[in-house]
Length: 148
Image 1 (cartoon, rainbow, N blue to C red):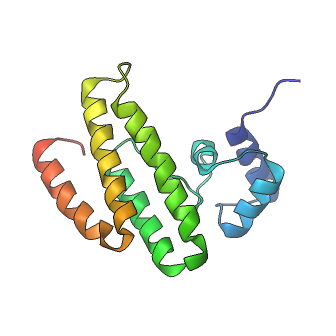
Image 2: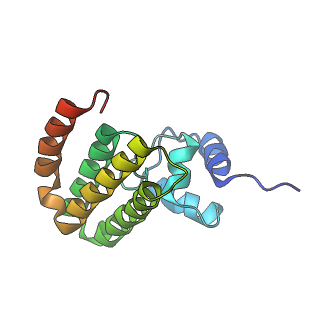
């Protein structure tokens, strides 16, 4: 029997349960039902999800800024989820760092991924300061690059 992708299994579970989005309670059910699941799988599933269960998008700086801003809010308000939030940012940073050094990735994308990895380091250093820093960074990027 062929294996079904975790993201497909998440989508099927959400449809079967009638979920319109994945929150903390749904995340618990997803983890119990889908072995080895990650927030990246939730992101790929297309099912809307709350932070921190939604994963971290890295296609554009605006997406990254939004997701890291939401995670900073969770980090500030939910001490029991701080470790989870940090682990998510570390995983996302590792992905961005790998892409920034890959010879198979276009030079402009490598540059963008390196800058994203830097932004995630700022988040890891001080999630409370991140939003102010990112707003300034986006102003600089918008002056340099169309479609940030």
